[in-house]
Image 1 (cartoon, rainbow, N blue to C red):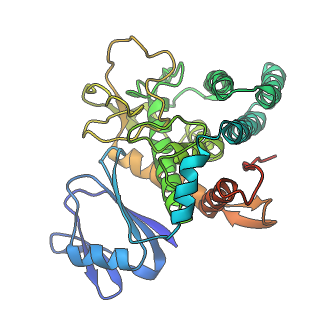
Image 2: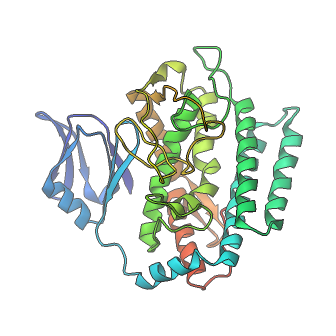
Length: 372
């Protein structure tokens, strides 16, 4: 099963029997059997899905995701996926359970920092500063396990994130067509440099996958433990996303930039951003779309700064990144809770199911995916 990205403006998505046709003018660009698809992602306002095609996709349980041309989330069209009324009801109570919230949040952050540490370990071998950095990250994991409040967990996670992106900056090789990337820290409203642009785009793709995983498992994507509940903010999906950021997006960006598969010429300046939507804790792109790749408002070091011109991926580079992302989430990894090798995208769903078990009281605590 695969995700179909429709990116070429002027394309019409049509239905022919149990096949999907991508048509531009009189030319059939692609002819895909529905049986090979589990999702269709439409990127841009210049793409049209006919009503018969949309009905057929939904009836075949193939969800349709609408995004802006630059990767901002718009909407997701799905059929009736679950009847987990009890789970949704219990989730509303569970997120207000301070003890449970602390335990889940500690696990989420421990998993994220562990996976960041493994990524650094794999790429920083031989660097004189590597030992100190790895020891520091190990220490952060121990400290998170010892705190007593959710705010303390968030504080430790924020510090760990700042340290990680400082390390990431040192791991990046210079661009093939210029002296430097201009990446100083994680900033995403708007992304002021190519590295932040790649990270933001990748985190948005990953978040969309985790929103889908929540809905498949019967969870409300908006009611989370670690990320504060706010208007229009998919807090539970953001909770589940944390452990996968270093495994999916950060690893893609680091490998692709250093290979090198991207250069400065793959990016362009976008229009100046409009003010961030109040209460959403996210970013708004040039077409008014949300969500944020991090869901936490302004990036570290951005508060109080004048708006900067966003740096965005050009279309061909964006398609290249989409291909890298799909390749990565289709890769299989050992999943300890089943003892089997499973594609990452399936692991997203299994982790969402596990979170549902925790909420229903069928499991004592949440176990993040922690690689070695």
